[in-house]
Image 1 (tube, rainbow, N blue to C red):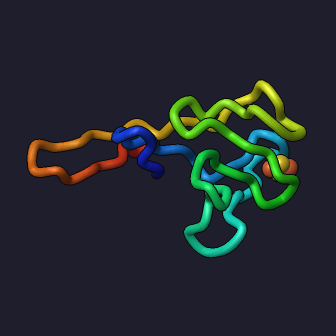
Image 2 (cartoon, rainbow, N blue to C red):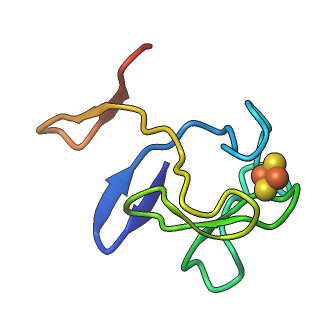
Amino acid sequence: MVRHAGRLHAWRNACPHIDGAPMAWRKDAYTNAAGTHIVCSAHGAQFEPATGRCVQGPCLGQALSAIEMDIRSDGSVWLRAH
Ligand code: FES
C-alpha cells in the first residue's frame, strides 16, 4: 500500500516482469529514495504509484495488479480478499 498525492493505493507485491516476483529491496521498502516511484528490487523497474504502470525497466507498459480496498469512515483500511 502506498500513499501518493493524498490518496491510498494498494498493489500486489508481484512484479509483472517475472510472474509473482516479490519487489521489496528490504523489508517494507518499495519506493525509490525520492519516494516518487515504486521500484522492483530485482531489475529496477519503476512504477507510477497512482496507476501501477511501469514507466521504466524491463516490463515497460505493463502494470502492477491492484488490490481493492475499503476506507471506512473511522479511517480504517480493509483490503478485499481475492
Ligand atoms: S522482476 Fe521486477 S523488474 Fe524484473
